[in-house]
Structure formats: structure tokens, C-alpha cells
Amino acid sequence: MKTATRDPAAQHLWRPYTQMKSTPPALPVVSAEGVRIKLADGRELIDGISSWWTVCHGYRNPHIVEAVKAQLDLVPHIMLGGLTHDPAERLAARLAALAPGDLNHVFFCESGSVSVEIAMKMSIQFWINQGVAGRTKFVAFRGGYHGDTLATMSVCDPDEGMHALFGGSLAHQIIADLPVDAASIAQFEALLDAHAGQIAGVVTEPLVQGAGGMKFHAPEILQAMRTACDARGLPLIFDEIMTGFGRLGTMFAAGKAGVTPDIMTVSKALTGGTLPLAAAIASKKIFNAFWSDDPAAALMHGPTYMGNPAACAAANASLDLFEREPRLQQVAAIEAGFERLLPAARDIPGVVDVRWQGAIGVVEMQALPELDSLKAAFVESGIWVRPFNNIIYLMPPFTIDATDLETLINTALAVTRRWAGQHFAGQ
Ligand SMILES: *Cc1c(COP(=O)(O)O)cnc(C)c1O
Image (cartoon, rainbow, N blue to C red; front, side, top):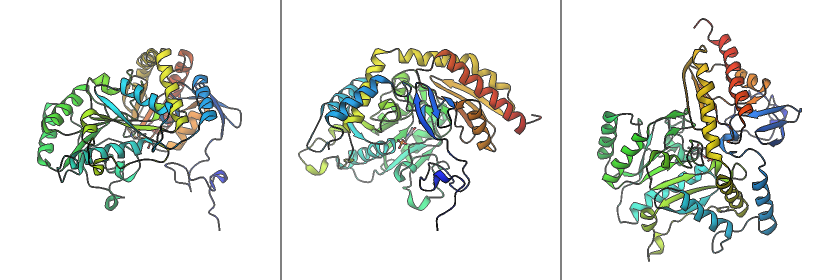
């Protein structure tokens, strides 16, 4: 007997983060162009979240589409073991040139979570290869998000990462409060010292904790982490999967903060939201710990589709667009739009904070009860916005024009105001 679902289209397709029994039907998409998503019933939505923060140049950018088509005609996929190809070689060199400091060694994989796993594996083996035993744990932060695989869940926020539910299956890491001032930086350093000898590395999202709640922190916090890690020889991992490729107004958050990590992970906007691709980019120091006459010192990792040529062609084309078109100025224009229009949200009932940085605009609510009704109201008003927990956020493609940006922000606020009037009346 088959399980009945409310949504017949979900009979076989198991959806992300979804209670399949109660979920409202998903909206069928037939095409997407620029910042617009076209639904099967003919409606068009302005995209406010860039398909999970990937589509930085808008949908179907012709330069990327052409590059992928041309690569498909040459070699769609080829293994990277024992063989190599120009798209991966070029992309690795370009990422090394763009990444700060001596982050020069690019290891490809297919998803963000896996790139974080690789960064963790690199850090653990970094110690093993130097003959240091026992350094197997990571320091990570409350509010952090690093992926959905078991190892990355262990460095996510304990609640969001479901450390309790999956407790017995997850590695036990050292989860700290993200420092905010001199006193908490001192506490963080004391924590590093209390666990000295156990710690393989420190992992954080730089400047913005994304899926954990769109929380911002100051560059000084990252500078203090860098200093603390340097003093103890600890690898510092920046997970730039959300912040990378312009989202905060610079190519990487590391550059904006003036801090170079030992390993940086990238994915999401790497291919301009075209094909799955990710990378862990390591410094000379990390790479050198694997450079040896001993075969056992090699990094024993190799995802089947790593460095997929079509995905690398898409990523190279995406980097071309960052070079040729004024993307970072467009991000600055989006930031200016948030600065002008978003503060109006402050007097909406139930709003506790309004903030923005680069092309991220956030309206934080006390709570978002009956979230499905708010999501539906956004769609009815012609925008695609997916609030989570108590967060309503906008992360449009960088190519959104001034008119669409204004429509997106003002519609989001008008819908939220109407909806909040029903849920937070009298506040
Ligand atoms: C999305 C995200 C990940 C996970 O990437 P996937 O490709 O979904 O596995 C990890 N870290 C951060 C900061 C992310 O935003």
C-alpha cells in the first residue's frame, strides 16, 4: 500500500526539510529567467533568495549557459584520478588567485557539506602527518551551520544541528558561544587552552552565520580568532559557502574582515547557481603537511564527480562575469536599497530586529507561527521568499534592477505587516 500524501506530486519525490504528510503542495516551476521564476500556472515570482543563495547572476545567464553547452560537447565528465582537464586546472588557479593570502591549493567536490567534511579531514590529518596524536575535535559555534551530513551536523548549532536527536551518532565537538567582546574572547582562548591537545581546528562562518539565523558579527571577532589560533598553531577554517562570491560586497568575507584562514570552503554561488560544485581551499602550511615521501601521508579523499568539467566550466564563466560586469557595485546598490527601504519594517508588530549587510536583508521576528500561511502570502503577492525559524530574509540575485528590488522589499514588508497584524495584534 502506498502512503497517501496531501500532495500527489510528492508520492515519490521526498522533499528537503519537509514533513511529507502535512506539507502544502510545492509549486511546479517551468522556467526561470533573470530574477523571475515562472510557474506552471503562468504566474511569475520575483526571486528573493536566489535558489538557496546560489544564483548570483540571475537565472540562465547566457555566458554561463554557453560555456556549459560547449563543455558538454567536449567532455561532460571525466574522472580526476590520473586524468586532468583545462576547466578544473583553470578554475583552481583562478580560485587560488582570488582567495586571500596563500590559500593556493584547491580540492574539488560536489557539495558544500562535503567540502566542510574535507576541510575537517585535512585538519585532523594535518596533525597526524606531523606525528601529533589525539587532535580529533573541532571548536565550532552556537548559531553556526556547516551542512547536513553527520560530521558537519556535529559542528552545527546544537539545536539546529539536532545534536540531541542524533546525539549518539554525532562526533562530540566543542561548541562555544561566538565571542562578542574582549571578555568572551578571553573565555574562548581559555576554552582552547582547556582542551589543548584535543583540538584539530576551529571552524566558523565568517561575518555572517547564515542558516543558523542570519546573525552578523564584527571583523574584530575573526581577527581575535586568528590571533588565538596562531598562538596555538591551530588551523582556522572559514566556511564561506554562503558568504563567498560577493554576497557581502567583497569576493570573500575573509577579505572584508582582513583575516586569512588556513582552509576556506566554497560552494553555493561558485557556479553562479548552475551546477553543483564545491571546494576546500587550503593554505601552503596545510598542503605542506601532506607533501611527503610517505604515501600514507596523502589526503585519502576523492569524490567521484570532483572537478566535473561542466560544473568547472560554469564556475569559470561565473568568474568571468565577476570580472566583466559590475557585480560588486550591484551588491552595493542592493545594500543601499536595504538601507533605504528596510528600516520601515521596524514598526511592524512582532519585529525584534532589522539588519542588512551586502545583499542580505533580514527582518527578525519574535516568532513566526503558522509559517506556511506567511509563505503562501508572499507567493500570492508575486515574490519568492522563504522565511525560517523567526527570520524573514531577502538575498536576491545581484543582477536585480532597482525597480524589482524596490518591488521585492516593499512587497515583502507589506505582506509581513498585514500578516503580523493578524498574529501580533495589540503589540
Ligand atoms: C549551504 C551551506 C552549507 C552546506 O552546503 P550543501 O551544498 O547544502 O551541502 C555549509 N555551510 C554553509 C555556511 C552553508 O550556507
